Length: 300
Image (cartoon, rainbow, N blue to C red; front, side):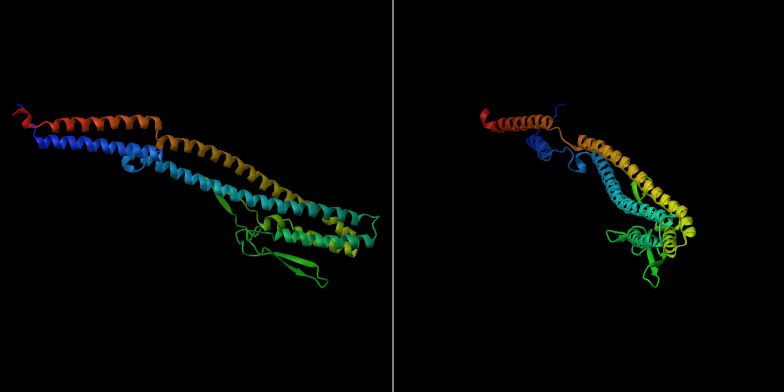
């Protein structure tokens, strides 16, 4: 049976062919202008889902990297403060050893006691350090001044009280991975009675009670060792953060390469496809133009 092709059928078929070629050319031109082969989900639903997933992973890695940067900065500040304390404690130990020497006179001991008192003030300043408006050694009570003091009748520090807590501050630096960035004033300064040992050394030297002053040398060393351990802990965490940061950067590079290969258009290939579509479009127009010029009058 012969299928009859009407003029209407031919016209509709020709228009459909021209419109399809035009649509294909528009898409290819968009790919060239944007440099992307997927500009909307309808271009490639599976590819679009993959791109969204890759971008989500990229944003998550950016957050990890930002957290690491913040944590590293906090650790660096804390370590610097503790290094100051360690240096001051070293000087206090030297002054104490000079003062308890049998060759030292009371005048020397008084001078040493006075300097130790000033160094105690310096340590308190470090212990109450603030970074970006927050107290760094107060645990999570960052708006509370961690160390409060009382003074004796001579205006010297008589006792120190800790008002912070022992809670840890952690940053998320990877999937199910957190890093502690703080050390509390309680564990650094109070647990080994650092302030008490310094106050007793100062008072015993000023009073000339050398036996008691000598007894505090071991306590000073214990407190200093605790400070050194805190510095080492901060350094260890910083090293871990550096390794995590390097790993994240490597992952981000790999991820972005995958993202680029998934969504980026091959410009050379796209231009060839566009040229092909233009040829099809022009052929459709040419053939339809030739047929439409022919009419029944040509055969009368």
